[in-house]
Length: 194
Length: 304
Image (cartoon, rainbow over all chains, first blue to last red; front, side, top):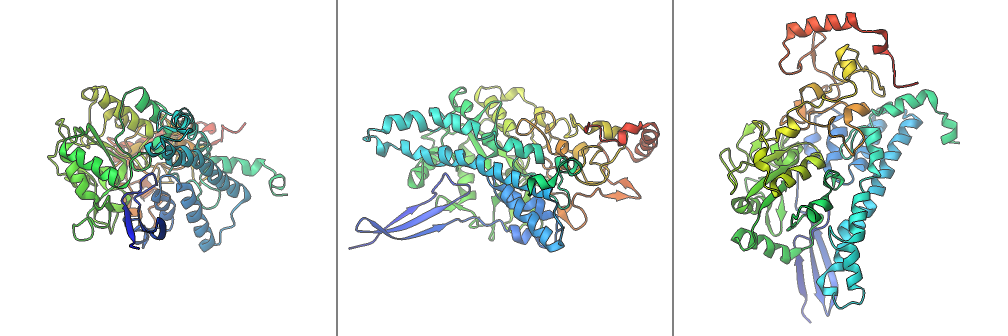
């Protein structure tokens, strides 16, 4: 039996450019490769720069998970500099991470995934009309609702960092976000970390 | 994904209310693989009219001008762009990468990146200084890292409803409606700026970030404090210095050691002053402002 190769370029509906190649034998996938053919050289760019450049450059690697990159960059610097990160700063960082994750859930489901359920190849399914009503890109009832509310969680990120995406607010010491500064006098850490 | 945060109008409004037919989008488009390649070829051949080409990301030329470091749909991305740019009625560059080259084009620019019609402030870029799209306009630049989603959707609506001629552009082809005022315009720290009260360290609500923490709000053209981010705030309001990301020089000073979150000064005077202010007047203003400053200018009057 011959192996049939299938090249999908681009795969689409991912963040960035992605290609997939699969080998199919007897109707089964026997091998698969992914390749993302974009090199910008962020690591090369950061060499020799101010250490805090990591807080500016790394979040901008990605448009949907910049907060995760910022968290990692902040912790990496804190580790290198042996910073004692105050608990409120940790809270502010974690809140940013949490809301970014919540933001990505409806975007992944409605924006990236559920559209495929409306593919014409499924038109003989008895669920097809309902899928189209709900999930059709931009006009589906659930799609529109899901995409619109997906912007809400990161409003919390913007309160802490000024904007989502691409803030650098998880700064060393007290964090840039002023809320961290004021709460250091006011909050009782023991309530949060019993 | 910042685009999906658009509010006035939302992305769904663009499609449903303004009748924009989205041919394709890397994260949101329906077609994949060969179907997309056919769609793109139909656009290039003119079978499918391409009214608006929105381009994000820098134009990657490496290695050796081939663009092979950014392949898309089985070709170098820059080859697709060159073909599509010939047929598009309007071209909109979104974000710093597409407008001026952005972070990838920062020294040493390993990917040999450039923007569509600029590399930093230098005219030219990938399409050349004299390029105009089918409608006779140069590339419309909506810079920012990221560009504010409402700037994007509003410009797309202006094009789709035939009103783009009403919009004036600056010398960098940015729509003036968003880029004529400064980031500082509308900043809640303006009162502290006026009295020269500084935010000396992070985590404070009082004070202005311009004097010590390297804020570029007074020198940067954007509407970040008029059209708020995520509807609620802006970097400077939250206490994060403006990085000047709507200007071609971003990231400023190539982020060399000592330039990040730190105002560059000579003998205590900021090297860069708000546009149009000369050094002598600035020194005078500083003396008067400090003398006139009321005690509350140094208080955190937000905390009650």
